[in-house]
Length: 195
Image 1 (cartoon, rainbow, N blue to C red):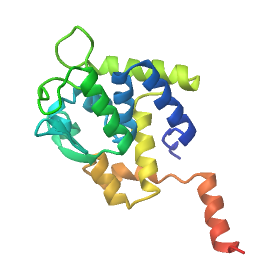
Image 2: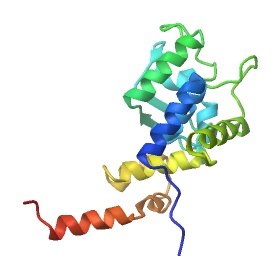
Image 3: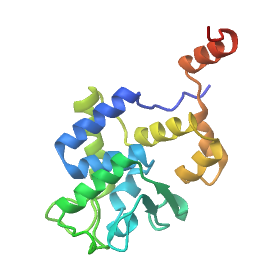
C-alpha cells in the first residue's frame, strides 16, 4: 500500500508562515506561493513580476508561464488575500514602484545578484524555516501537497487538477487520502444526527 503524501496541519502551516514572515519578505513570499498557490519550488523561484502583475500593479492571479511549469503546461492560480498582501509589501520593499513594476525582475532573488535564485536555494530556505518552525525539515513539495489536500476538502477534484497544473487526473488522486478524522466525521454525520 502506498504511503499517503505528507502534509502540514493547519497549525503547522500557520507556524511556518509566521516564521518565514519574521525572517524576510522574500522567504515569506516563497512559502506563501508554494503553500497558498500550490507552486512547485522551481515555479516559485523562477516567477517574475510580470507573472503577478498587469498594467504595472499586482493582480489577484499568479500566472505560471509554460517556460516555468512542469511539462510546459501554463496555468493561472488565484491569490488569497494573505499572498496578495505579501506580494504588495515585497514589491515595495524591492523598490518596485506600483504602476511601474520592472516586469522582467524575479520576485525572489538573492540580494546582490542578477536573475532569479536557483531551485537549490529555494529548497534550502524551506528546509531551514521548517527546522526552526516545526522542529523537523520538510521538503518544499510538502507545501504543495498541503495546498492540494486542503483544496480537495472544499472543491471537486477537477478544480484541484487545474489549480495544481496536473495533466492527468491520476496525478491529483494522491490528494484523496482519507484521515482518521475524516472517517470519524463521516460516521458521526451519518449516524449521529444533530440534536
